[in-house]
Image (tube, rainbow over all chains, first blue to last red; front, side, top):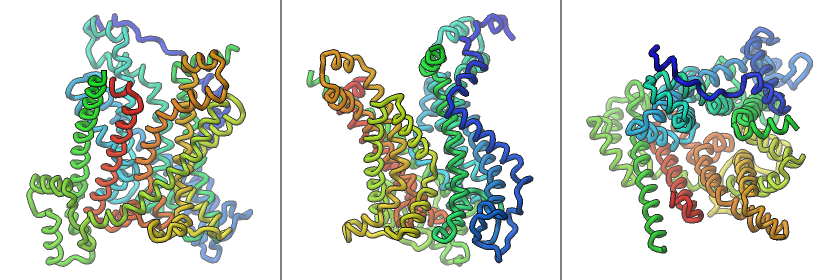
Length: 300
Length: 322
């Protein structure tokens, strides 16, 4: 580490993590969202262990049974237990969402931070690339990627990851631009601090707020996208159960077996809603203007 | 003064057009790459069990894939600009003709969905903002959050179960052109349009609420109130009217988004539009159709955004002067 790096002024200190979490959980709706997400995460981990029946254990004699004490969510057209399949499918839905958003986050942050910090021709080229990506509707682009690579779990993750990369690049660039002109960054640069150090020590920690919010909201959209792709037969492939695929299977039985569509759909809806509620709560807390309002309300 | 305004408007339009042209070229590069990125031979994959040496060679020549890459790109670019998007791998039909045949169904569905979305969002967003912090505001906010989170294809399935299977009021699928039988079209478009309208309306409600709140906090609203203007006059002449300007943007974006998001809804309701076409084309690996549909939807997205920006600049001079 160079002398100038050691002496670089500290970045503006953000509020402590404890106070942010306190503010976040003070909002009852956000708290409810957090609890739901916690339950979904636990189900994703232990779902396959606690599922009462095998997810592919067919029993045609028992096909299309309505919800009962033996089969809480009923059975599908092949006599498979819908409750067990919903439980087990939680893991794959979360896995696809987390992996694809992690991909989008990493690539998007690198593109955005390079673009926003270097400016000039590189910024122009990268941002025009992002604009081009934005011209394609998310699901359509994901379908085109699946059409190229063929359906499957990895392709689904990659397709969703690629389509959500531009939003992370744009959010990161915008935040980088506003932080880069802050006096502490200017001072650090004047002292001769290296660009990499400035990016790592000053820029990155100060743009995490919008990125956290975007991650939460993107997880919600990624779950919807995975479900939509699987519903179209282009996402997670059988025999692996997924919520979207279960809805696809339910299409032919809408009038006679409502439970086949209600429960997997409700699982998607509740998980997406929870991510959205937490995302909104995070935005309120991490947006300085909103935070001031919340803190003022708390003091009252 | 008039000359200055005209100058800035022309400069703004020129800048916006140049930007759209650059993005359009990028879009064409991406769309062209779809076939090039397919691992293996796309014609061979598309033909599948229908493969014969003769059909393979004929299709390769018809789609131009036997030419060098740069020649293919120039050919695709030139063809796209003149409306020639090649021929379908499946049946040899011109892609442009297939797309144009499907386009009216998608546009009529997206417009119907947008009308329903606006019919929900405008009153809900304005009402919610004017009652900020009250119970009714909370209910509208939660309802819009529900609408944003619900998968549209699931919503469609629930509506089919209730209104088609249980009540038998409306058909669950099928399409009749509005020009052939407007009443039958209305019956058939109702469920898919409600499906799309609920999601779009929920998103727009949030934006409209935020726009109204934003305008309501402006200094001139305080001035209008302190002048003693009637609350209704302040609300509708000063707040709502000015809040509608940003609503124009979100309406345009929603329309563009719906053109892409229509895919799953068209599949659920067997609506023979562009979305259903893409779905079938992906299943049969009909790459020219996929390319054509992706290009058409992306171009419509760009044009709607361009139109919205121009309208926005006409309505709000600050945009073109910035």
